[in-house]
Image (cartoon, rainbow, N blue to C red):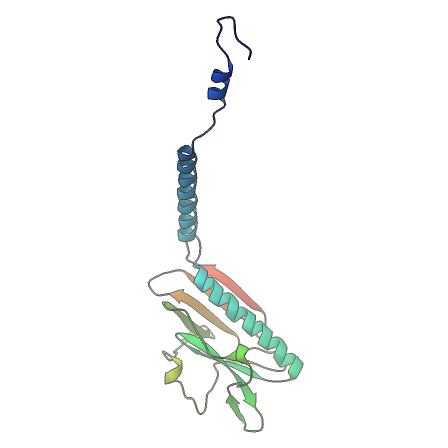
Length: 188
């Protein structure tokens, strides 16, 4: 065992200097980092757009794009009926000469928006009054507000998706040629 000039060992001092952090110190650091990450996540969520509205807008955009392609490929006419709280898809049945709900395609089932979300429909720049829910719509002779025709044409429209009590909204706009665009407005 080496000793110094004074006759004491330097190993005890070296061990004390290399001791490192205690478990308590590490837990405190991890807790502080966790709080900072949580605060940053919450502040980004408050400053950014509303994720639920964005998800619903993307879903509707995807469905309209898909049905527009299906209409072209299968030479079928599709329609969309909106309510304030959701939408449903229809197919034109040429044998019955009327719009019917597609019973065999679960992808085209009625879709209710998440609570506190609402939508508004605009055709030719004017708001179209919508029923509050699916139950208040005419079930026997449904008439879609928007049509996706087998010729590739789409009824030009604008949909605004909002959250009650919030000024922010997502707008989904479709042109006659089937081009669909999404814009985000009034989110700070």
